[in-house]
Length: 224
Image (cartoon, rainbow, N blue to C red):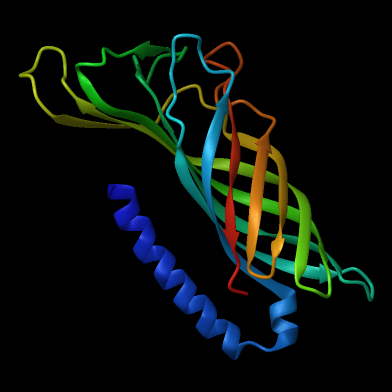
């Protein structure tokens, strides 16, 4: 619920600013620049056998791209910059964030309310787009990302302390890969698109944590 309280106002502001700017910008400027946001959920692959992950792991990407028209066609090659935010909610918690090898420890169902890790990246997306005259668009690309921050959040009982709702936040998860990369796919109509991202690199360094990676699916909004 807290995430929704933050995301929904940002969404309304984003749409309002996008619509305002779209009315001001010329058609030529709209063709050259794309600004958008992906509202996603992550499907985590290669998780430990004793880990259960929530079905919805909400996150978002905000991006801006410059479009290079390919000749006189309706196709573009685009490159840009973005911020990507991922969450993983599970019934486990990292035992020691500073350990050389990251281990997720299962939690008892009666002692916790929420446990998640959060990863934020700066990204450089590349994409080839095809625009049809009827407003339908297709795009396929590749994204390179650099890890800006990693943290976890736990709400529940803490061993050795009084029972009850306790919130614990920890920053900087050790043994994470600095770089991440994968393929992207979009398809839709005008300013609304379906979005997919398939990461081919692991979150953690090989041999120093589970070789997990996210597959992201969601909706893209591009006011211009």
